[in-house]
Image 1 (cartoon, rainbow, N blue to C red):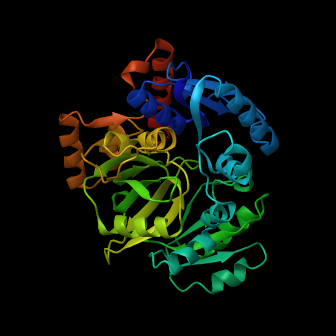
Image 2: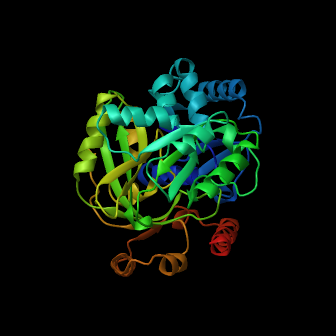
Length: 402
């Protein structure tokens, strides 16, 4: 007799492990991961089987592997679906949606919509059309960056970032001081940084953007899931209280407190997603301006975010939504967290050291006392000796680079 389902996850990082954990906890079902290398956070796990294939970044090869694996899995499972843990994997899936949807249960978005999300200029134009607030910006290329700098009308400090920091073109570029996002204090620093970036192999668009004032605690993250018909069924708002500060990880959240209830911003983004007929998981980065208290949408990721497991612990599981929608077809609305929790991807010591907001620190202490603190990677049912050692090394490195 066939089992109900299995998830095929692309990647082996903490995002992949977190997704597998949520599915195992809710449905007692292991997942399969395909990855170009085995990252230690997913090694020696009994809830995730990782298949290493160094050629998966080749699109033709990836699709062939997925189609072959899918046909084999269908002999044992009634339904199978795919989760992409990176933008590059997602892009390859979307470009081959017609082939994959014949075997997998996913309903992928159209490639034009994906390119809009991945191109910040086009995305902000979409925000303008749908009246979603976003920070003012100017885009530039290697040919016109000096002219772009002369047209800046929002002052310093400001933010500089590639049009898509997760694109292979930017990830493969090598230059001194490389980061995902740059905080720029003056015109001289801006010119130098742009010239440094363009001296590398990266020749794509750069975004020069107004800085929205406020620290990490002014950020908000929203996780959503839209069913196969484009209706938003799950929404989960969180308040990031600490970001990663390693240059390559900058912009990823290190600690989040979930926010209970439904807020106006959630209603606005729900309407936005349904108007564009979006399907699947999405992750929004939002910031509240210190002065005006207005929110601004910084970006949208058309996939589960690295920190999406905080939603699961808060009662609004994105992972459960995938299964209920794609496997059982009985997904119910869950438009808000039902409990307040603290999710972390760093040791508590770092949270207490770097979070300066006293009200937030008080909340952290209260949640710790109530045993409402969760780590994606620390799962009591999956802590073999080898895995424990891997996690000790992982968290010691976190302490070192912060």
